[in-house]
Length: 234
Figure 1 (cartoon, one colour):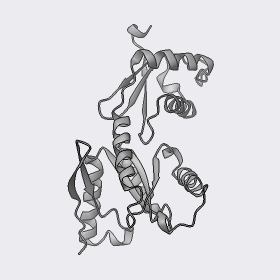
Figure 2: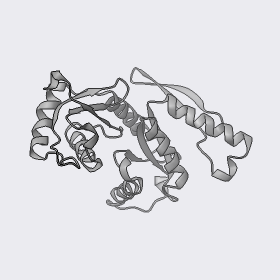
Figure 3: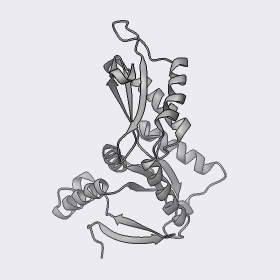
Figure 4: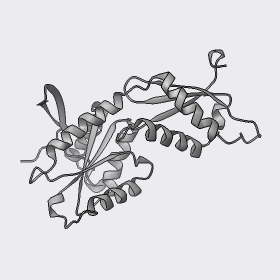
């Protein structure tokens, strides 16, 4: 039979124990009214909250559906590592460009979540299943990665001088003086500046892209926090 519970199992992989939480996923909206599906939804959301890395399984024939995007939105909201596993890859007619085309299409549909890792698998033939486990471990490590403050400032401040933030609406110059990585469970970068409320969203995206291009964090959400500079950053 089919269970709607989340099922935990332990995988021993190269000396490490990895806890796998398998869920039935979120169902279509009209079915959520049924009691068993309602509790399945609650368990799926609970599983997302408990995991370090979420693997969202999508059908290669159907593609990314609205319900998949809702799950992805929850993963992002919880600031978890994210991998999109495209299943039934054995059924797709392909050439050397097909995987690249699929990955670009998925990232375009996901918008700002274009940092997600994408892997093409087949549950039936076991294609890339062990590579998926390796990828989960890699994303988990990226999520816990810490960038030394000196390295961060040496690189970022130099780049910010070359491409400074735009002036505030009142015409005042926004100056970023100091950057450090904070947070224990996922990467948060604190930017200390004179007008933290006047850094526009497009410049925040520019800074995030700069961090990703230099330091990686593939498959991991990054949070940028802008704070008023203190005397130690003067």
